[in-house]
Length: 156
Figure (cartoon, rainbow, N blue to C red):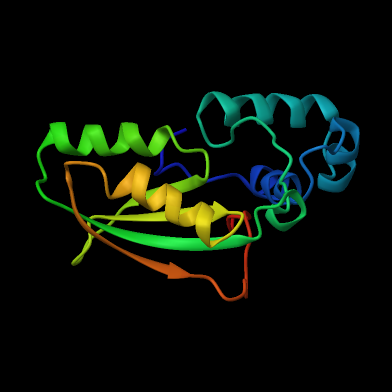
């Protein structure tokens, strides 16, 4: 299934349900979609093979594990060559607190989502993982005051 392929109504219902509860049994998924377990299992395997869905995970509340501070950091690169981008991306992979990295358009080159314990933790990451990189020209960081909306569900 490529990005141009439309989901069947059954697949769309399955994905909506699984995004709410990935631990649901195949028989319960079949019941909720008015289908058979075998059909749901086969369709789910096809969606996995096509890369539409990946392995199920459990979401962790950051605040409950001592990571109650979110920050977003915009990064401007000194150069846009493949070597600089590769070096930057490798450095981002090394820091577990940087949970999302986006290459973006506009005045900035990257947007980072960082989940930390506190300001000293954030400062350490900024100084040792971001500002120290030769390929980084400048960065600007914003602190999240409150999560207004956060979801992992993609409309299908």
